[in-house]
Image 1 (tube, each protein chain N blue to C red):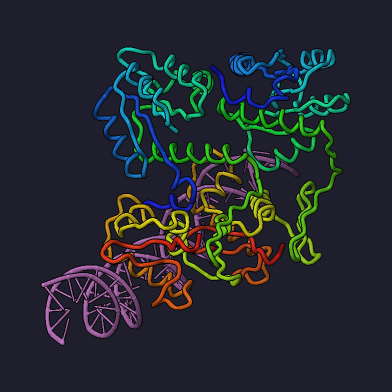
Image 2: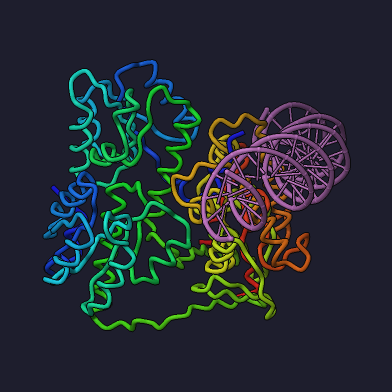
Length: 249
Length: 249
DNA sequence: ATCGATCGTGATCCATTTGTGAGGTTTACG
DNA sequence: CGTAAACCTCACAAATGGATCACGATCGAT
């Protein structure tokens, strides 16, 4: 009946115990049934205290963690679980979708995150991916250090600090501007339509005008380009969208 | 008027088959025509039994599902389709706007929902977004560096970068020129009439002169052919149309 | 609650692309 | 070899798409 998931041999034979931390019972049960369907053992915790309790009894491979909880801050919870030592994957559920949340979430030790409302297939796909990554890690991967800095031409982004320098001079960007630039810088040379950018930078199920992207590109250019009319970094691709210059790789 | 479809290269060329489950013929046909307009194949089912029948024959990427059906409960239908395993997107239509909140929608396994009465633009926007999300999930979620490059003879197209090199030298093409060339290059040796090209590259309800294709072929040749009068790549098939040379495979 | 920064949107102007028309040229065929 | 159909070339005007500016709405901080 259920297909697609059982295919991944090794993972399937692994024991998969999942802790669901979520205060809305409806959602918790929804997630639970679907996880059971794909062969996971599941426990549910409705608040932070219960969560840490169950967690300390151990044995979980994955925690699905809602950020909004009645008693505890999800981020603290996340950090606590991390510091417990065992390697568990943490999938964060959050209402907001800015890159900032993503960064903060990842910094606190989440492995992936999903914004509400999410669809079940999407959730399952992410979980699947997480299990796969854990598998890969166990068979010998290096957990990298911190401080991701991206250099492209005269541009330098510090991802965690969310700071940008251009030829050594610091530049102030707003949140969206930074998110946008970060996305470009991570995919140099690739062309993105405005819709794709709305999807990736603004978030799925965002319904706004493509025109909005223009404005942000415009403002971004006025800050990072010496001559915004003849940009070096963020280039226009006529009739399609924008790309980050591949000369700057 | 309509744009943004060709931009997403693969999506446009993907087969998009949609099952419309709706008992009111007027609405069903309305939806159908508009889906056809944006290049979807469509089938209509007027009740639950017919729906499952068609669905099991498979091949749908999307189901537009009315909750109110004469014979079956839409909810059950939705769950049945989900448990069939294949990944389809489900867009739910419902009359009640108060009752169906996020949680209920999720519980049913829908990826998105829309309350009646809905506007056509809104419907189309949601459907497009769904297709985009599915695409993104299938091609490995995050920022994967896949980089699809097509080589044919001395020609080399980078699909994501929308860049073209001929014998190593980069060439600048406009959006339409690139789309046209891409379509040829993906179907080498096959002959296309001008009308077929208008359909596939320009869009489905495009009404223009076939002559337009000439001009574009002309401009394209002047950019990629060493001797446009004796083309190597895009060849004329007299009385029929054009094809991409099969020598270059 | 107030203030300021930031973001989304609308209007306007400007650039490129693209569709189209009018010839000229090639091809097929009697 | 002549003719008609099909195709190519070229130039130009219009439509499309992009840049810019300015104005409210919104969100966060004070």
